[in-house]
Amino acid sequence: MSINSVQFQAGLSMAEFIARYGTEAKCYRALYQWRWPQGFRCPACTGRARSRFRRGTTVYYQCRACRHQTTLTAGTMFEGTKLPLRTWLLALHLLTATKTNLAALELMRHLGVNYKTAWRVKHKIMQAMAEREEPRRLNGFVQIDDAYLGGERNGGKRGRGAEGKQPFVIAVQTDARFAAPSLAVIEPVRSFDNVSLEDWIARRLAPGCETYTDGLACFRRLEDAGHAHTTLDTGGGRAATEAPGARWVNVLLGNVKRAINGTYHAIRQAKYARRYLAEAAYRFNRRFRLHEMLPRLATAMLRCKPCPEPVLRAASNFHG
Image (cartoon, rainbow, N blue to C red; front, side, top):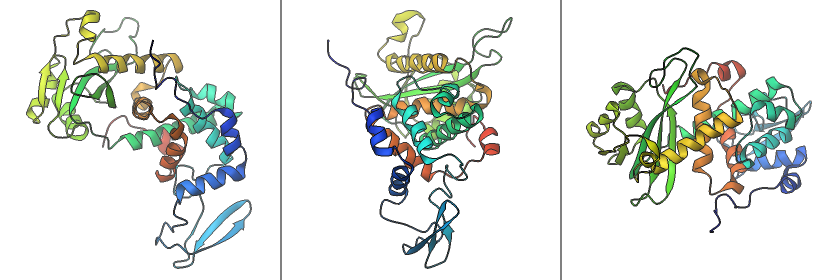
């Protein structure tokens, strides 16, 4: 039996993490390098010359050209944090090194913080993932499916349109022979209607894709948008899910649902589904570079705008 190179790749072990990021000073130097790899750059005027001073325990940098003052975390997703940087990097390591991810409750136990803090850390990290995945567009051969997050309520309606379920579109880019998937987009939509699908297609597919879907009526908008469209016979059963044009999207869909149900058990899909689905897409799209995920995600958080708790909680599942 051949070894799955993705599953057996070497990541960053806990011993290596401690050696690289085990002290606050090491974490500070790492974040400085990730934010300013070519040296300090003033966020106001892009000047390079700066002076440095302390105010309490915080290090400030003052631009010598415009005299703007800033800190390492100002203007980033880390802005205003009272947590040690090593706690943030440990959270990033735990969330990128695990195969099945961690819920905020489990993260709380690992970090030694209260649940509210763990929730805030978890959602800020997921928000950074969502912002990194936002501009992604698939091209070439793309398998697309409709799906829902959330279970049936007692006595409620089954299937499409059921109350308490969040619809989302999942799409996987493959090679021409459907031999292997490369990239994925997983995003909530308001409903499976023509308007929602037209918006999703315009944002998420590059021109001239060759698409494969089931017979859901709104997928006809793919043809209207200029994409080649093949409707697959998905009458049900295992054979339908393993059809060449549907196999990889169904494999990923199963993995996503198992990960969410197994890790989180229940989420507020009506409010936070976008983040949880973006987290799944982020991890999938970087699955071949496990050892790079921590520095890349930390860099993404340094490039994201601040997200204070009121903004973090006032989430929307939908674009725009």
